[in-house]
Image (cartoon, rainbow, N blue to C red):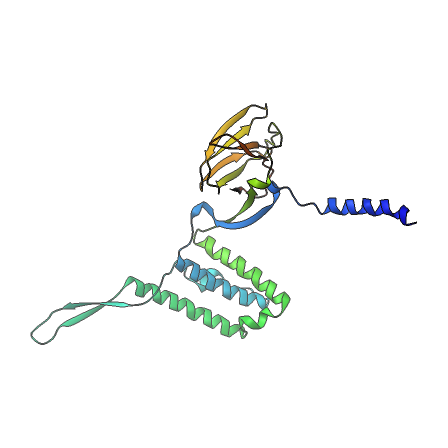
Length: 265
């Protein structure tokens, strides 16, 4: 009886191994958030929006609708308060000193007003942040509200985040065996950034759908080069110094508008 079950065990193990196979390297994507168009908020906007997000989070923990962002914070305020003096009208024994509020002073007063409003909101809620975290549903609701309020505040100031994909490619783990031409999905265009993390110059050779090869770029060490590509684009990576093939890759369809392929040894 034992010998009858052995083939079944082998088949079952084979199925398990196949089912647990990891995704190909080109599809192992992690995600990061970047400021769109490189436009990032200054420190003061970050501070103000974070405070508003804290208020919204507190309201959400108690299933209350948070106040509009315009009623709670002043976007784009800065820090902190001080004065400068100007000496004038001196006689033999005395001088008059005129105090003038500096720009940083005016900014600080705005921050202080915002802080006071935050404190009032917390007092009205009657519960501290730490008390809600212990309760799972309240915590998840608060985290979601925090993120939404933070994005709302940033968008009010004209700032927006976008999600980007990152693919780590170790050339030592890739082979040069691959398709000899591109089979393109022409309905989709995506931005792909090649970051050469090696110390060598790398020729990026594109395989046209016809099979013709064309070097479209030389990737310099520690530099990034961007292309707009169709999924299915196939490349070979050749070391510039001796044209030895380092890897063959076919770019799949990615869910993010921009994906960075980080090349390492």
